[in-house]
Amino acid sequence: MNLEDRGLLSWNRVSNTYSVHPIIRSYAYAQLGDADRVQANSRVVDHFQSQPAEDVWRATGLADLARTCAGADTRHYTPSDFPDVSMSQDNLDQLLADIAGANEKD
Image 1 (cartoon, rainbow, N blue to C red):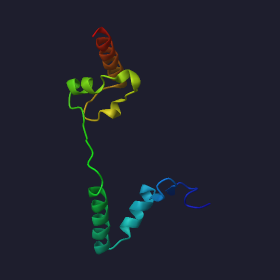
Image 2: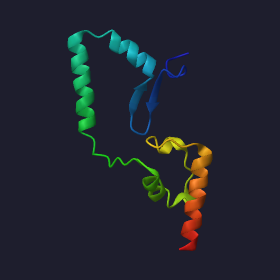
Image 3: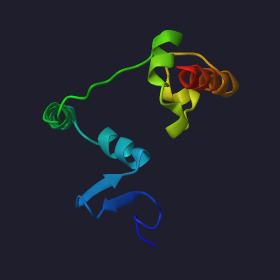
Image 4: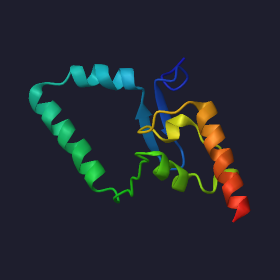
């Protein structure tokens, strides 16, 4: 059984990249000396800084949540979609139903 079979290493055939399981990554990082850790951290920073900027938007209140969910009938949302708002699945479902009902009245 190899690392890929055990789920410790995965290969994305589309992008031709490998991904190492977080536990293995953590173990390997702990084996690095200080200078190698600095270099590894710099490479990670360089990689993410080279990526296009994301338009990260998070709801900070119910009004923001309502605007975000306006098209809720085409997507299923869970509370984890809105990490800055504390809400149960039942409350979120009710809010989405209310928004859908308000949109139908318009």
